[in-house]
Length: 139
Image (tube, rainbow, N blue to C red; front, side, top):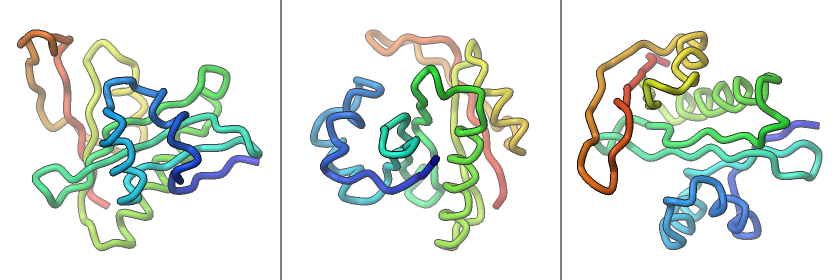
């Protein structure tokens, strides 16, 4: 059975292994501050979702990751909707995320009602990447 819970310290190794750019200390902060979720199928860890606060007041999803066998099966949608409901219950009125323009995630977020909000060029070494686009949604 699929479940979404806040990550706990015992999940740290898996959380840290996903998106290896997150430092170990930042990983611990995300877990401590309940800004990291783990996704499970029964007891098996299958994904991670993290967020921070953009401009210190807008929830901004920084990562949604599912292990390959669990993609395109509705788990991502369930995870995002869960996060949206939690943010709404905490009184937030808007949420954001971003993705590179060469990734399919932009279509996923648009299907969930997110709107394009702009983009940035990251061309400073070692952070070069394709254009990063921002998406937002009123909740």
